[in-house]
View (cartoon, helix red, strand yellow):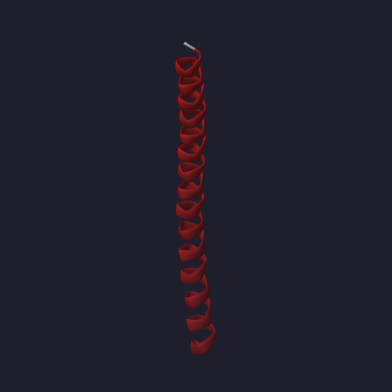
Length: 56
């Protein structure tokens, strides 16, 4: 019975760690996606500004 209780505690702890880990990783992925979109927009704007300067 003691071994079964220890296994239950270990599984609950691993479950909690897994839930927290995936929440943190999911948050980090969203931050990276937002940063990538911002950098893409900046690149497009800069390329457009350079094209306008070359025509003039």
